[in-house]
Structure formats: C-alpha cells, structure tokens
Image (cartoon, rainbow, N blue to C red; front, side):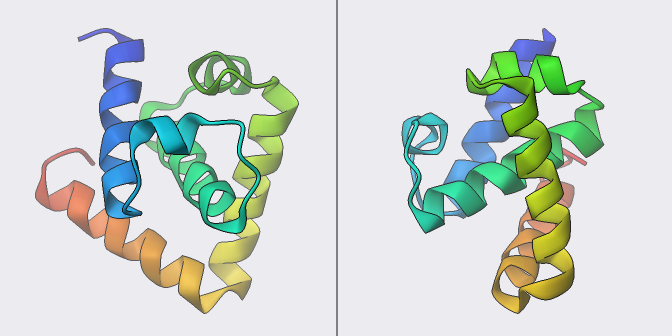
Amino acid sequence: MSTGEEAHRLIKLVAKHFRMTDRELMAKCRDHRTIRARAAAVKILRDVMLLSYPKLGLVFQQNHATCLNSYRNAKNWLETDRFFRRHYLELEEDLRKQGEL
C-alpha cells in the first residue's frame, strides 16, 4: 500500500471517529469541529507514518506551515483541553484495536 493510500485510510478512520466524512475533514472549512478533527488527523499521520510537513501538506492540500500549525495546536490541546484529549486518546485506542498503531 502506498503512503498516500495509507494516509487516506487513516484519515477515513479519524473522520469516522469524529462522526464526519473524510470529505468534510479534508474541506477548507474553518469551523471548530473540523479544525480539531483535522489537527488530530495531522498529529496521527505525523506521529504514526512519520510524514514530513510538506508531505502532510500534499495529503491535506494545504501549505506545509498550515500542517505544522495544526500539529502544534493538537499538541497544545492535548495538554490544555480535556474534551480534545479525551477524543484523541479514544481515537488512539480505536486505532490500536484495529491494528493501525
């Protein structure tokens, strides 16, 4: 499986966890729910697949700096936002159970 295919498979799983479609997660939408789901997806892909920020930019059709900002936001929210942390940890557990992590 290619890197792009694996990335999109993980994106679909993240979107499902956040109860949205992969299309909604990938959209240029800036609403709170989508931004947080996308940040979780960026963090998962960066940490699990070790994708560079330019490659993440290609996957998400965004500038690499936008992906870097999403990653930093996700790390910050894990420390400061109980709601985001709970969802992110549940997502990691779901991915582990499915053998994705």
